Image (cartoon, rainbow, N blue to C red):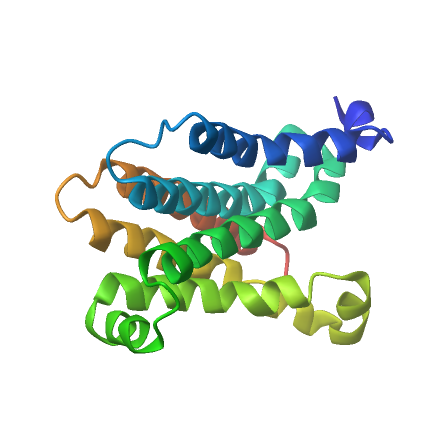
Length: 197
């Protein structure tokens, strides 16, 4: 399996697979299959995929160790950028289709509705991660790059809380995301504990 991950075609195939959710969303839009509240459907769809890609990004390191597939690391940056892409779509849906570019209405939401506040915080944490994802930034920041990119855990946590506060009653989906995030964070902390001094 690791040989396949190392091949030239692996990254283009992964890129195309990351486009599948967007293609599914476009198909639903074209077919008018978004239900009674299309804006809400698009918002939830893009939000779900933002969290999924964030968690997939965080899962790369423990998965490569557990499965002994070191070349999985080649896909971490790509998955992180796709998380940011779907997060941007999620935010753009709210800005364009829900708030119609009304700054006052948006500011009122951010300051008064706690799930919006948490969502904004999660997205804001993703911005420096996306900006510093290039090889040039990795070289410039050195060891600080790893420290900075731990913000991905905080961003994912903010996303889970954002989702939890949004749904209020049926918390099964955000609870599942929260369990996955807690497992990934636990795996990271355990790995640090077992490292030799």
